[in-house]
Image 1 (spheres, helix red, strand yellow):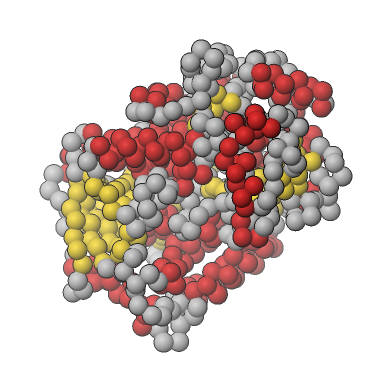
Image 2 (tube, helix red, strand yellow):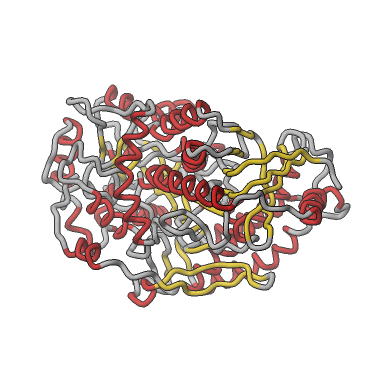
Length: 606
């Protein structure tokens, strides 16, 4: 038996972003022992990159807003493939979760009468995003961390989890190692909440940081949970494209929400060409109307003018930019121009301080004096672990999931700002669900010594392969496959080739080697991360092949239309007999009172 330390908790939360922190706070508030594990340092969660705001129908700026409109916007943004119950709970509970943050000390921007200020974002009918300049996620993390630390939650930083354990059919704990020196650690727990975020590192250009290697998706998949909607990968339309060292770094949608204009190398404002036919009436018909909307927004006033075309949904804007570049109308470094320099420089610095400093320090560009160069970057995955809407529980007893690692809430495309409200709504529900389960369970489940030994062997294996492969070479191959065959636009021949090459890559993933010691060894870490990255990549490619239509963030060149027949189910991915299996999972029937909301017509205030 290898040496390892052991910790025991009622609830173990893996991931310390917004969802993980909110889950830990909820479980702790119910009197349970809670452990919070984070792969990096506390405070470095991906949540801090969500800059534009948190979506909640407070109605502080547009009084006509309400949860019904937010629900409808979310469902329509997801092309009706969302788990309707998750979208309903999210819209109904987001306002209270935001007010809760305010009570806990979050400092939001304010209206003239002291209420939380809200801004416009793509796909939202009303000004709905509560914000703190363009640093909203950072303020949320600060607030949640303060609340959690004061509750006495035990935090385990720079700890990577590589295996979940079960006692029979139910969760029993987790195993991992300290990233600093490779010491092993066992966590015994009655319930586990996964809040590990997304899968962005499977792609070469991404806004996601190094932590996003599909850990939670892979861990859940291996113990019997299923994944849904993995074909729906959101490419944020605006990431930095220059210099190379920061390529993919996020340029918040708040730039467009504050009036930023997209132009190609001919100076054309091109987004009007790409507006969806069924939603054209929501956007300004010409530059004059768009200008009136921006002018009113800058004065903090309401207007009946329609929103600028730059505030179309993310999937549509990303495809538009991709097409402009591909057809030769791109910027010098392979993007397009995003310009907010026509506005007062002090207003830009006040409203977008992070963006001002980011471009000034990293690209030597003053966004108050000229345009930025931006292009699509893999940003978010709508798919993830399938969960129950009310409890956030998976089909594995004792295993819960919340945040980006969980699927269903956003359907085929997520609206900007819904990620932050998703974190706190379902983080709270996951914490409550895990706490209730743990209380009812009673005795701590048992973990077999043989399972622990197997987990240790898996961690040791890369050091024992004398003729193994360099993990960075294998990662490069994966990036090339995903970029070439499973990108913004997809086609059957490409997807089949991508799947074939990913299947072949599995041999390489299983034979990577690590050299040196376990002390500060990123090569060893990558050897272990490639396993979950491979699971995520294959799941995305296989689901994308089966969905023979274009819907939301999934665009098929060979099937460009959205087909009603494919709007009746999700694709579910699971481990069956040691192999990846996909099947259709029928959508549940939406209640009549919710169906009626889609027959209601409203003016597109913004």
